[in-house]
Length: 318
Image 1 (cartoon, rainbow, N blue to C red):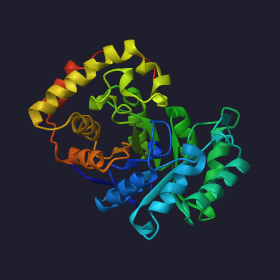
Image 2: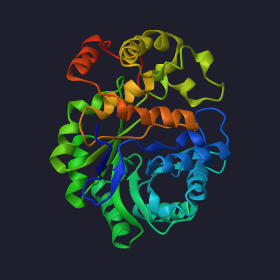
Image 3: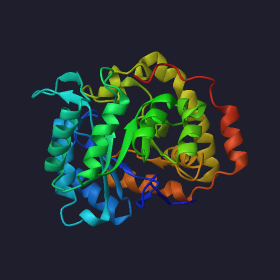
Image 4: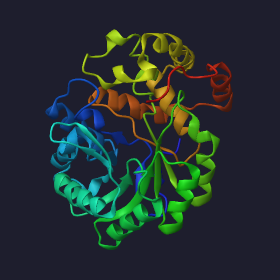
């Protein structure tokens, strides 16, 4: 299986298994900064060079964590961060902001948090409905011209918006949720990305941990875990959606692999350019994820998975 790819409209080679860092600072229950830094260092040692964060994760704490972890190793990694979701001093959500002046302000703050001079990949996290995409991408393009950003990307936009954005400035990557239980991008987005030369970055490729089989009931999550607020993590939804895990487990047993490796390998097998950014705080899970590269899912395997999967996922993503 191909391990690296070149980000769209760039010369940047990145590992197709990156590292989503969100859970190191918030959302998925308790966390330990030292453990996270150790995991980040191990990731870099293993060649995981595409690190994903956002200014809203821990309202700046996640970017600062990455900045601390990459000191002395900046040249070994490609840093991706995002703007648009505003948080208050106590973490409260204040809505979306994609006004050009805010984008400039957010970029400067992210550069400071990360302790770097340039952000490799700068994403619009979500689109502010009050600002046209052309104006947003124009402001992002200005950051490229200023040398503060190398490449720009978008997250969770539709095909029409992606086309309009790309007409203003080359879009290098589109980040959207994609996994065995979230397959919406197959309908149109994949084709547009291929046509325009945009790299597709799959976040939550393990279904927020559900497809690993680690979550069999709500009791498996800490009381502070954000997933408890999501429609797919109600008792009823978990019970029904475990059918996905059963199919994955059958393949895993036949391949002498883990369920996480099968779920990741499935995403990577959809085309040779997809990048995944599974999140973890633990070294042994990181090493397990990297084992997906050794898993060869044949056309027969992929067809069997397709045939056996439940027809729909119970519960919306958010």
